[in-house]
Image (cartoon, rainbow, N blue to C red):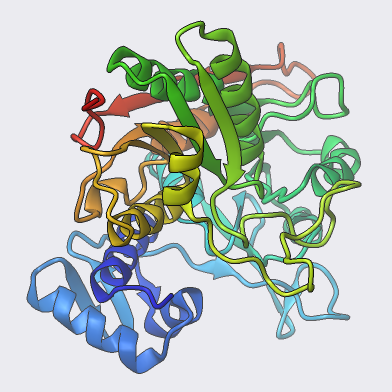
Length: 390
């Protein structure tokens, strides 16, 4: 189904606001539309006073400049070199985040504010979507003299996560994981980390729906990130433990929300029996089948698309189905602003940067105890949930 113009422009606005200056060509590739289409959208958003337009780029209205990204080395090119020139990471803090990830870009900007205030130089590395892409970028940063590392690996599957544990545990500079919590007892258990308490976030969503009187609840969630896996597991645990919840189920929010290469054993892409890509989730049919009146939807873009499909099927939000989104990146921008669990994304980045600065300030060999910090999400109530009408 073709994405509506208004939703596409909301996504453009959210990306630019969270990421800073963005090339129009990059937006077009990310949204899978033509450059001409994105250029037209940017012009309209500029006329509305929501963006600033530059030569081939879109900027936030309050743009304060952008971090220069350190590109990935070309195949066969030695770490620490790009087009034959040094990266200039010496003495800097390396930040490594995945490309096309608006959620983690908000975390990045939180870390950036703390590091810049401290006078610390930053080298930003954008990891492509391929499995294991972070490893060569980190090697490159260390070879160029980076003093410390802030990293948010993509980790689309449990397999890709486990594959990174060994080399990340051997990094020889102070390192802090952002918005990631490794498996207990793993090689990274004793690595500094700062992340959201997603169990608590799911608790907020379920508790809100239950408090309104909903007894049959659906979770439609992604399955291609550590956050998604935590949300799915937490929902099953919380819903099954609440005596008020009479029925609950977990489904995939969209067919492409599964891990790519490096899936866990038994994990497969969602396909039809004939091997063709699966159809989008028919949430309206599922709600009727389960008799559900409430839904938790992860993440935001999937949530907005699902709410739109509900409307097309004659299901009104919140009159017929109450919805709580999870992520709160663009949840407020829908035609029906969505009540959402809002992890403290920027605060995660700030806390991670502060922890790294603390590590860098200590004498060599006196690092102190490992810190595993969790920050609690909040619930932003916007009116997409109400008491059942029956």
